[in-house]
Image 1 (tube, helix red, strand yellow):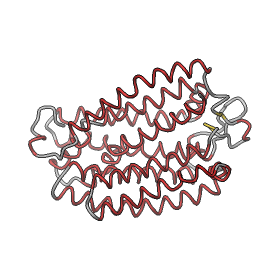
Image 2 (cartoon, rainbow, N blue to C red; image 1 turned 45 degrees about the vertical axis):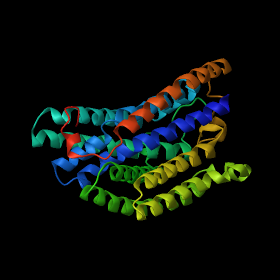
Image 3 (cartoon, rainbow, N blue to C red; image 1 turned 135 degrees about the horizontal axis):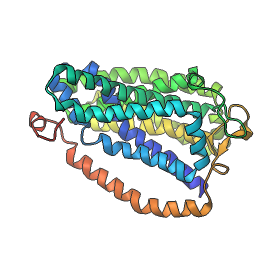
Image 4 (cartoon, rainbow, N blue to C red; image 1 turned 180 degrees about the horizontal axis):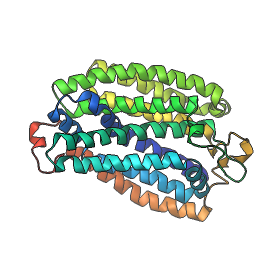
Amino acid sequence: MNTIWFLLWGILWVIYFILDGFDLGLGTLMPFLAKNEQEKRYIYNAMGPFWDGNEVWLITAGGVTFAAFPKTYAVMFSGLYTALMLLLVALIIRGVSFEFRGKVESRFWKGIWDICLFIGSFVPALLLGVAFANIFKGIPIDENGVFHGNILTLLNPYGLIGGVLFVLLFLEHGALWLCIRTRGELQMRAGVLATKIWQAKVIVFVLFLAMSVFSTNIFSNYFHHIYLIPILLVPIYGIFLSRNSMAEQKWIKAWIGSAITIAGCTLFGVLGIYPNMLPSSIDSKYSITIYNGSSSPLTLKIMLTVALIFVPIVILYQFWVYRKFAHPLTEDDLGYEESY
């Protein structure tokens, strides 16, 4: 059961990064991509029906950590408290910007909320990358789970390169989503920008892998368990799939390639630290694992039953939402009372 829930924990983070990744990326890109008010509204409405449903997966991943691995949750939220609070505040600012921007017809008012959307999108993307890179690297926790450091401890070179990689992954993901949901000049500019971001992403991805060799023990799991090697090929496949599809302007296929890249990068690190959940950089015997940080077997069994019932319902609902609202946007869509 411990291993099953570890895998489910990793998969939930993958789903969150794929789904919320594109609107975090779009929110970050908007000040540099939109040239006028109409294009800004296109970008807002490209995210509008989806962003809050996408964040459900963040709550789910956090809830699973709390219920299935309570010690992991306790150590993570005490040691990474400042970073996680900054993440929470940024996400709140982003959510408010969606709802408040259109309440007043004022250029200054809308400009304030556009800035909030950018901050509330860029900061979470960066912090999530920094946090997960530090988890892959190992964080300084002692035998009592006490974190010896501060937020500056997390801003080490490996953590920062992980943050930059996440930002680029989400930027490309968001630009490709805009290509799916728009037509004309805005789509063309988004496609060109996605190609440029792809080039930067590949460079940072290679650098991240190289630094992972020297800064982490991730690859040791792959050397000891040869059957995990194909996981290393997943992000590489996604990188080439997205680039070839962009060249052919097959935007849906390119977005799927981007999603595969995000999934591959996340699983690469998560499976690389197994059975650890929070490796200790002080001493490996202080690490929080799926065994010493988990709930009781009965709790895990009950949770699995609940998950098997309700998670498919959530997936079906989100499938319906994407089917209903993922059509290319037109000026008529901007005229609806419910539009952003």
